[in-house]
Image (cartoon, rainbow, N blue to C red; front, side, top):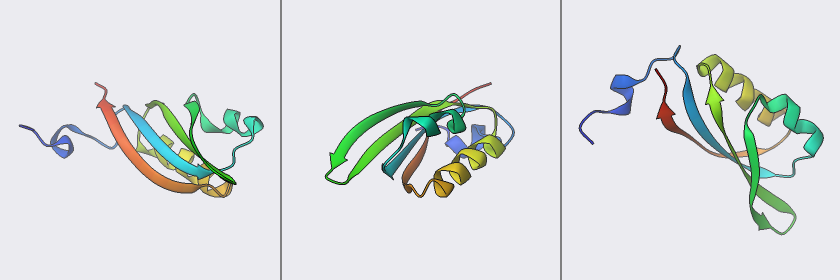
Length: 86
């Protein structure tokens, strides 16, 4: 990679994120997670792995999503920037 992502990324810029969590999600919670697309990826018996993908306007909005996931008692597996927006 010729340019590091940190050189192009700004805290106040939008980006498309992929967040993976493990736990059980009720569909009524989806409205609390902005406009993230939520899909069930794997089943681990009593727990499931969900992928959330969506455009967030800045890292403050990302923090709000992460706080909501924490409040819902979901285990955070990963957070990945898929694309930086201009």
